Amino acid sequence: PKGATEGFRLGCPGMNQTDCRTPLEDEDIVVEVDNAEATGIYIISIVPGEASTRLIFNGAITAVIAEGDAITIDDAAIVFDYQTKAQRSAAQQHEVAKLAGFHGYVDDP
View 1: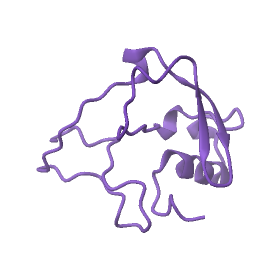
View 2: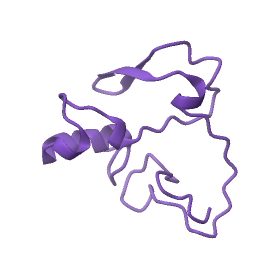
View 3: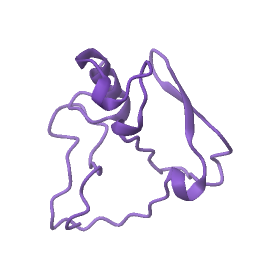
View 4: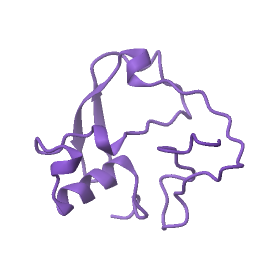
């Protein structure tokens, strides 16, 4: 995916830093992408739990997502405690990274 690897990860979530990775430039990846802009369905709230996180959408997601599909969240789009990415503390950025899955230990407790 020459020039199109930004924001894509393979092997996520992962149990160590080598599982979740950006694709190589010459890697062939078959993908069909829908996004919030195209579907009009957005995550409006996130409810973290001990073993899972509940995503609340502004509409029915069942017509858009099927079994085996993945939901990715751009960490720059997350507003955490009213803080944008540029305003977040290191602790807030760590929590956002865990939610978005852009760190090496996303599955670890």
